[in-house]
Image (cartoon, rainbow, N blue to C red; front, side):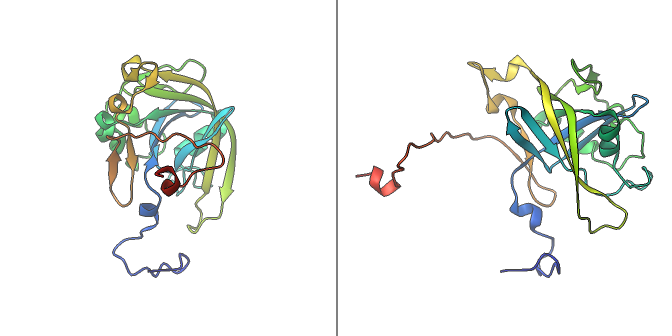
Length: 218
Protein backbone atom coordinates (compact mmCIF):
# COMPACT_ATOMS: atom_id res chain seq x y z
CA UNK A 1 0.00 0.00 0.00
CA UNK A 2 0.94 3.65 -0.37
CA UNK A 3 -0.69 6.84 0.84
CA UNK A 4 0.15 10.52 0.82
CA UNK A 5 0.46 11.86 4.34
CA UNK A 6 -1.04 15.22 3.40
CA UNK A 7 -4.32 13.59 2.50
CA UNK A 8 -4.15 10.84 5.13
CA UNK A 9 -6.01 8.50 2.81
CA UNK A 10 -4.47 5.29 4.17
CA UNK A 11 -7.72 3.39 4.55
CA UNK A 12 -6.58 1.83 7.84
CA UNK A 13 -8.39 1.96 11.20
CA UNK A 14 -5.68 4.22 12.68
CA UNK A 15 -2.89 6.41 11.36
CA UNK A 16 0.12 4.08 10.98
CA UNK A 17 2.85 6.76 11.03
CA UNK A 18 4.05 6.29 14.60
CA UNK A 19 3.91 2.51 14.22
CA UNK A 20 6.46 2.83 11.42
CA UNK A 21 9.06 4.53 13.65
CA UNK A 22 9.69 2.00 16.39
CA UNK A 23 10.77 1.53 19.03
CA UNK A 24 11.03 5.10 20.30
CA UNK A 25 12.78 5.75 23.64
CA UNK A 26 10.70 7.68 26.16
CA UNK A 27 12.00 11.00 27.42
CA UNK A 28 10.40 11.38 30.86
CA UNK A 29 11.10 15.07 31.21
CA UNK A 30 11.24 17.05 34.45
CA UNK A 31 11.10 20.84 34.32
CA UNK A 32 10.20 23.60 36.77
CA UNK A 33 8.51 26.96 36.22
CA UNK A 34 9.71 30.29 37.59
CA UNK A 35 7.97 29.60 40.89
CA UNK A 36 9.70 26.23 41.21
CA UNK A 37 6.58 24.11 40.54
CA UNK A 38 7.60 20.74 39.09
CA UNK A 39 6.29 19.41 35.78
CA UNK A 40 6.84 15.79 34.77
CA UNK A 41 5.75 14.51 31.35
CA UNK A 42 6.73 11.65 28.99
CA UNK A 43 7.61 12.25 25.33
CA UNK A 44 8.13 9.48 22.81
CA UNK A 45 9.61 11.86 20.25
CA UNK A 46 12.87 11.82 22.19
CA UNK A 47 16.41 10.66 21.51
CA UNK A 48 20.11 11.29 21.83
CA UNK A 49 21.45 13.37 18.95
CA UNK A 50 25.18 13.71 19.64
CA UNK A 51 27.93 12.33 21.85
CA UNK A 52 30.67 14.95 22.04
CA UNK A 53 29.26 16.76 23.91
CA UNK A 54 26.30 14.51 24.72
CA UNK A 55 23.02 16.09 23.59
CA UNK A 56 19.38 15.03 23.54
CA UNK A 57 16.14 16.26 22.01
CA UNK A 58 12.46 16.01 22.83
CA UNK A 59 9.49 17.29 20.86
CA UNK A 60 6.64 18.72 22.98
CA UNK A 61 4.15 19.19 20.15
CA UNK A 62 0.48 20.01 20.56
CA UNK A 63 -1.40 22.71 22.41
CA UNK A 64 -1.93 23.37 26.11
CA UNK A 65 -5.42 24.85 26.21
CA UNK A 66 -4.92 26.74 29.49
CA UNK A 67 -1.25 27.47 28.91
CA UNK A 68 0.57 30.54 27.56
CA UNK A 69 -0.76 32.50 24.55
CA UNK A 70 1.43 30.54 22.13
CA UNK A 71 -0.19 27.27 23.24
CA UNK A 72 3.09 25.78 24.48
CA UNK A 73 2.88 22.77 26.77
CA UNK A 74 4.30 23.18 30.27
CA UNK A 75 7.54 21.33 29.45
CA UNK A 76 8.25 23.67 26.53
CA UNK A 77 7.25 26.84 28.34
CA UNK A 78 9.29 25.89 31.42
CA UNK A 79 12.47 24.87 29.62
CA UNK A 80 12.53 28.01 27.48
CA UNK A 81 12.21 30.19 30.56
CA UNK A 82 14.36 28.35 33.10
CA UNK A 83 16.72 26.71 30.54
CA UNK A 84 17.13 23.40 32.34
CA UNK A 85 15.52 19.95 32.34
CA UNK A 86 16.10 16.35 33.41
CA UNK A 87 15.52 13.15 31.41
CA UNK A 88 14.45 10.26 33.65
CA UNK A 89 14.63 6.79 32.13
CA UNK A 90 11.24 5.07 32.03
CA UNK A 91 11.42 1.41 33.08
CA UNK A 92 9.06 -1.56 33.31
CA UNK A 93 8.59 -1.01 37.04
CA UNK A 94 7.59 2.62 36.43
CA UNK A 95 5.31 2.05 33.44
CA UNK A 96 2.09 2.91 35.27
CA UNK A 97 3.46 6.08 36.86
CA UNK A 98 4.93 7.18 33.53
CA UNK A 99 1.57 6.71 31.86
CA UNK A 100 -0.29 8.59 34.59
CA UNK A 101 1.97 11.62 34.13
CA UNK A 102 0.85 11.81 30.49
CA UNK A 103 -2.66 12.86 31.56
CA UNK A 104 -3.68 16.38 30.39
CA UNK A 105 -3.34 18.04 33.79
CA UNK A 106 -4.09 21.77 34.12
CA UNK A 107 -1.18 24.15 33.72
CA UNK A 108 0.97 24.48 36.82
CA UNK A 109 0.06 21.08 38.29
CA UNK A 110 2.87 18.97 39.78
CA UNK A 111 2.28 15.61 38.08
CA UNK A 112 4.92 13.86 40.17
CA UNK A 113 3.11 14.75 43.38
CA UNK A 114 -0.26 13.91 41.84
CA UNK A 115 0.78 10.33 41.06
CA UNK A 116 2.82 9.84 44.25
CA UNK A 117 6.34 9.85 42.83
CA UNK A 118 9.14 10.85 45.18
CA UNK A 119 11.52 13.40 43.66
CA UNK A 120 15.12 14.06 44.69
CA UNK A 121 17.36 17.09 44.02
CA UNK A 122 19.60 17.18 40.98
CA UNK A 123 23.27 18.09 41.23
CA UNK A 124 23.76 20.73 38.52
CA UNK A 125 20.25 21.86 37.55
CA UNK A 126 17.10 22.95 39.40
CA UNK A 127 14.54 20.42 38.09
CA UNK A 128 14.46 17.38 40.39
CA UNK A 129 14.80 13.72 39.45
CA UNK A 130 12.40 10.79 39.76
CA UNK A 131 13.97 8.88 42.64
CA UNK A 132 12.75 5.47 41.48
CA UNK A 133 14.22 5.86 38.00
CA UNK A 134 17.68 4.23 37.83
CA UNK A 135 19.14 6.69 35.30
CA UNK A 136 18.81 10.47 35.07
CA UNK A 137 20.38 12.92 32.64
CA UNK A 138 20.66 16.51 33.84
CA UNK A 139 20.45 18.90 30.88
CA UNK A 140 20.91 22.56 30.05
CA UNK A 141 18.81 24.11 27.31
CA UNK A 142 20.48 24.81 23.97
CA UNK A 143 17.75 25.85 21.54
CA UNK A 144 14.25 25.29 20.23
CA UNK A 145 13.51 24.61 16.58
CA UNK A 146 9.91 25.45 15.63
CA UNK A 147 8.51 23.27 12.85
CA UNK A 148 5.37 23.68 10.74
CA UNK A 149 2.19 22.77 12.59
CA UNK A 150 -1.12 21.45 11.23
CA UNK A 151 -2.90 22.46 14.45
CA UNK A 152 -3.94 26.13 14.51
CA UNK A 153 -2.48 27.96 17.49
CA UNK A 154 -0.23 25.08 18.51
CA UNK A 155 3.55 25.01 18.43
CA UNK A 156 5.30 22.01 16.91
CA UNK A 157 8.70 22.35 18.53
CA UNK A 158 11.89 20.37 19.04
CA UNK A 159 13.95 21.18 22.14
CA UNK A 160 17.67 20.47 22.21
CA UNK A 161 19.70 20.23 25.40
CA UNK A 162 23.23 19.37 26.46
CA UNK A 163 23.61 16.57 29.00
CA UNK A 164 25.81 18.03 31.73
CA UNK A 165 25.47 15.27 34.32
CA UNK A 166 24.34 11.63 34.45
CA UNK A 167 23.20 9.61 37.46
CA UNK A 168 23.34 5.81 37.15
CA UNK A 169 22.18 3.54 39.97
CA UNK A 170 24.80 0.85 40.49
CA UNK A 171 22.05 -1.75 40.68
CA UNK A 172 21.72 -1.64 36.87
CA UNK A 173 25.45 -2.12 36.22
CA UNK A 174 27.21 -5.41 35.42
CA UNK A 175 31.00 -5.35 35.02
CA UNK A 176 30.87 -1.58 34.60
CA UNK A 177 28.28 -1.69 31.78
CA UNK A 178 24.61 -0.67 31.87
CA UNK A 179 22.81 -4.02 31.92
CA UNK A 180 19.55 -3.89 29.95
CA UNK A 181 18.24 -6.99 31.69
CA UNK A 182 18.52 -5.13 34.99
CA UNK A 183 17.43 -1.73 33.67
CA UNK A 184 14.34 -3.06 31.83
CA UNK A 185 13.75 0.08 29.75
CA UNK A 186 10.45 0.47 27.95
CA UNK A 187 9.86 2.14 24.60
CA UNK A 188 6.90 3.49 22.66
CA UNK A 189 5.46 1.74 19.65
CA UNK A 190 2.42 2.74 17.60
CA UNK A 191 -1.12 3.28 18.84
CA UNK A 192 -1.31 2.53 22.61
CA UNK A 193 1.48 -0.06 22.45
CA UNK A 194 4.80 -0.19 24.27
CA UNK A 195 7.63 -2.71 24.37
CA UNK A 196 10.05 -3.98 26.98
CA UNK A 197 13.70 -4.58 26.14
CA UNK A 198 14.15 -8.24 27.03
CA UNK A 199 16.64 -9.54 24.46
CA UNK A 200 19.97 -7.93 23.52
CA UNK A 201 22.41 -8.96 20.82
CA UNK A 202 25.76 -7.53 19.75
CA UNK A 203 27.12 -6.98 16.23
CA UNK A 204 30.70 -5.84 15.83
CA UNK A 205 31.40 -3.00 13.42
CA UNK A 206 33.12 -4.27 10.28
CA UNK A 207 36.52 -3.38 8.86
CA UNK A 208 36.87 -2.16 5.28
CA UNK A 209 36.52 -3.67 2.78
CA UNK A 210 33.42 -5.37 4.10
CA UNK A 211 32.71 -9.03 3.53
CA UNK A 212 29.26 -10.11 2.46
CA UNK A 213 27.69 -12.94 4.40
CA UNK A 214 28.18 -15.30 1.47
CA UNK A 215 31.89 -14.41 1.27
CA UNK A 216 32.42 -14.90 5.00
CA UNK A 217 30.95 -18.41 4.78
CA UNK A 218 33.52 -19.55 2.21
